[in-house]
Image (cartoon, rainbow over all chains, first blue to last red; front, side):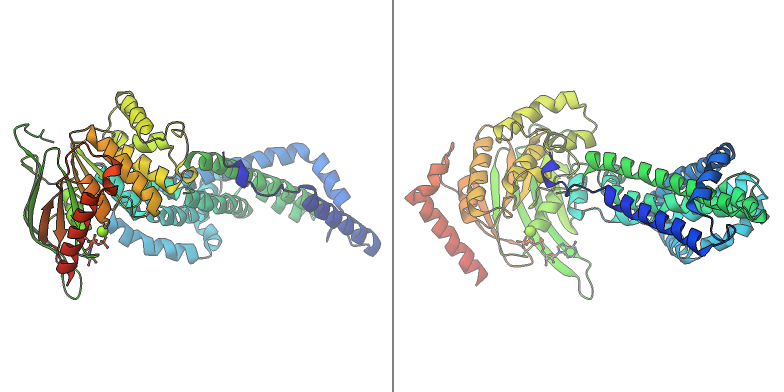
Length: 256
Length: 261
Ligand SMILES: Nc1ncnc2c1ncn2[C@@H]1O[C@H](COP(=O)(O)OP(=O)(O)OP(=O)(O)O)[C@@H](O)[C@H]1O
Ligand SMILES: [Mg+2]
């Protein structure tokens, strides 16, 4: 029904071509300039490392992917609840919002070691840290969306007899959907950042941990392999959020 | 909510109603001691200068604003908030863009927790009456402005209210669509026993649709003049082309001009 306004067809092969070009240039540069493997492994050796370490990579990817996805889901839920609470209670809004903005500005990743102090080495501190770094964009985004509701629509809802909760549920919440997804997309990348950094400092599993191990053994191809897997995982979560957004847009498309 | 006693002959009564907004630095007096009543089945139009307080009056009737003085009665009972038997139409259609036309029309039922099945038939009948049949599943952005206001009419009427409040519902439309919507409303009206308050800037709309017209003063709004429209019902849109109609319109225009001076 809105297909007539579709964007021009996307060309998938152009960016792929650029990617392939970069890989080729990288490979040639490494060969001709005789760059040591420890500094910059060739794409071929990274691929070989991917192949040989596949079982370990898969195991650690599962740990990181699970932690990041879990943290992302908790952050989205917690961020939305936080925003809803601040929307419905002016008092809590006044108490919480300035602090939330302040935290948004902090380099939150720097607080990682604190989580280790509080929760020890392992999954709990890592998970809490990943939630911590990814909850803010969702909360701030959702709150902006809830506030963006059309005053006329809210008045219409109240005229129909809607109470605060109903007008929240039927007008504010659908209005906020695009904002929620914008926040969730940032949160998806933040959750992986949080999980990986958490693994750097506080884990005995996961791709971040694997990178640290490989670094200790100067196994640079394995570092690259782990990073490649991390990129794929991050892109997958981001893509899943995008798909969910498309579905939500079909349901709550906000065009007038 | 208490059910209106059927013996009460008035759908709504304003009793020395005043409204002052607590604006700064000086409070704003929007409505000054307004008293009038709308009988059951009566169609009342309100004309008045821009900014005089007509919308404020209507928002109080809708239970969305509380009077600062006086009292409002709805079917003999003091009005304290939005009333289940009141339908409201605003200047913009204010349809929810993420709902289909049908779901928008059913929105008051959703809010009042009335089972869909119970009002679906009434909704479909209204949609057909206003000429939106076939567009039940469309989203608001796929409709023209006139079609959106048609959907808004259906939404205001879907719970079969006995009073409907309309605040310049057609003023966002072009002149031709606007006359057309007036005709739709007239047609819809003849078959019901509903009361209405209709705020408009169009004298033609007021005379064509209303049994009685109130002309408000400049702010703060008071009732400056009252005119009973001398045309019997049922009326047809053709009435608007008659000489008698033109005479009443001219008379009202004079009243308004005198009022503004
Ligand atoms: N919520 C509010 N707070 C403060 N002032 C208000 C509020 N609502 C309306 N007013 C003021 O009250 C006065 C009357 O406004 P109102 O909207 O009732 O006028 P109106 O007769 O409907 O005008 P128009 O014909 O242009 O729609 C205006 O001066 C307006 O600024
Ligand atoms: Mg107005």
